[in-house]
Image 1 (cartoon, rainbow, N blue to C red):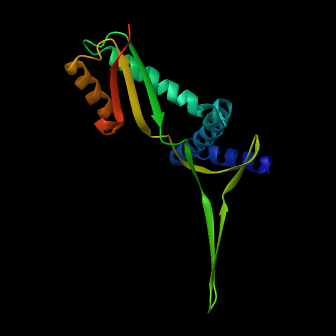
Image 2: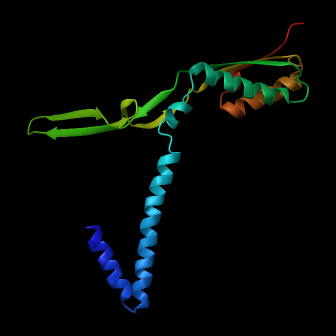
Image 3: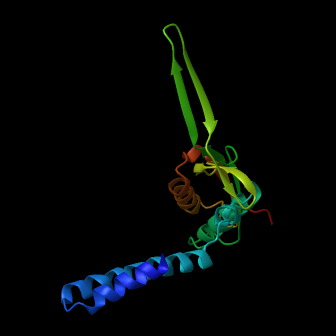
Length: 176
């Protein structure tokens, strides 16, 4: 097979037509690029990148609290600040399913199965979407919590960040 390809290429290269030489050259460059892309894609591929990005419920809550603490602390008049966030539920995952429907004259049967692929860790279902938990409520305790203007700015910031109603945000003063 390789000899046939080599002979065909030599036969084309011996002809004087520039068009044929250009077509052959472009074709060879295309083949080389395809092989090169497979080699480079294989070396830089992280098949477990989805799994390494998964974080626990506690880590997610802690990250949100840290970011919110940084934001609220930067508001004028807040001072020292502590934040606690409660979430409605845990992470929700939606997996791909294969639906098979069989209909007879008198009945219809539907069979749902998860779509599964082979990975390094064995068979794994195909993940379509993953919903992070929604913020249910926020409590902010800060040195400026008794000031009504500061309290309003904190509530406005938290409600706009997490799209929750103001009655789900509590702001109080830190005890001395």
